[in-house]
Image 1 (cartoon, rainbow over the protein chains, first blue to last red):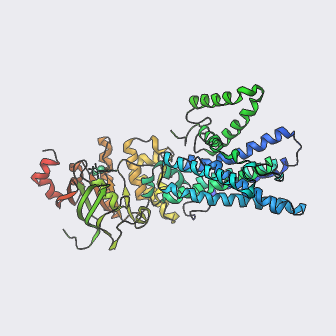
Image 2: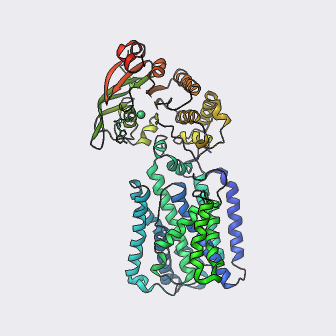
Image 3: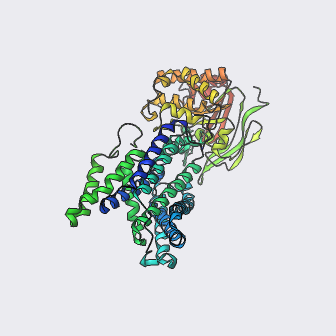
Length: 316
Length: 241
Ligand SMILES: Nc1ncnc2c1ncn2[C@@H]1O[C@H](COP(=O)(O)OP(=O)(O)O)[C@@H](O)[C@H]1O
Ligand SMILES: [Mg+2]
């Protein structure tokens, strides 16, 4: 395992690969099932949030940076993928659509990854609060751009996006995200993310290039946020710039923190809980958001190490 | 002392933190396979010197020559690739990784699987405590064990020259003994050149061949370790006599 080239996935993840295949197959089966529309919608929200939280965890949890720009990356992916579909997929013959949808998602991810690169570069010089402010600024800039860009509907939003997102797509891509992040950090190369977080000086004196890891985390994290954005666009069928403000970023940050920062499985679980919680609270309508906020505060006080953080590799 | 072909040499090195100058033209030589120590009071500039050599700090003047090549202001991870390895002050282990994972990070730049396994066995041999705790998270080790791990992790990069910054700092005396014994062994058995920074001059001079005394960013004295131990000035200022 030592001798593999730095970017290759480790052999230890053979088991994980099997899980991935199983998860993707289940997801495909799911897409043939018939479900209540409401539950189906919530389930897709859950999947999309898993992708967002797990990918942000690579940046904030494993590499120890503090990004508040995840909604921005998501927006880049959402608008890119939606625009692509509106231009190319709608006119295409039916059988070509799944392929075009995949292209739209990957394109959204790729453009988001490029913006991740642009944001990742300042992370070379900035830390903590300063980095948080830069990423926050980035998210706001993206929002202002789409708000004024006629081609994507400007302030009135982008309408008529085809409904291509299914439960199958969502969970297949959520599984891929989990798989990629887990295999990335569990490789010898990937231990470098944790090393950079633990001690940048010591990491450099081991021959690790911290800059490369920080930027890689941003690029990979942004890529999957972009994918999540694409799924979201083709699930809601409508995009409004206000949907990607910094509150959305905070929501994702809360999932990562509540999940224990740097533990993929528990961050994914936190994403599930925090997506379902507002739905469960729906009957108490007007107090819903207050209760939600109070519950989060309570959970954080009860388990500051992370809701599902047991044993090792939790952040102190 | 034969310094005709030093492995590492500093010429007139100056380093500043902002506007404050910390090193005022430090020159020193480290011959291959020697143990050279840099002693001095707290704040003399010992750590600054090591950080400047390993590229963690920017050098404003002078040069660092290693193995016949100028490496002044190269990036830290490039310098490690030249087998010049720095164990920073304060036992900076990766606390969220296990002992074994820390060791593996030390071999980050290496691809020779067999050699890496051999070196893991070697460091477990010299520090059996690490072997017992291989699966433990490094953050939960005692201070002395973390220092052992920091040195071992550096050894995993197969250094030709190892720079140790205060390996005795804040460690139980019994573990200090074990660590210093192993520093000597590493030098003798593996032929690794060592530049040892210490506030504890007694300890450092006892195992070194040659020494430099640093005061407020300047070398004020240099000699063989044996001679420095006899030097009245050193005895009074650094050996507590
Ligand atoms: N990060 C820093 N910023 C500003 N000044 C520093 C910094 N680190 C060290 N110094 C100053 O540089 C001088 C040398 O420090 P250092 O090399 O750490 O000394 P030593 O290792 O010999 O105790 C001291 O005056 C110290 O205050
Ligand atoms: Mg020091």
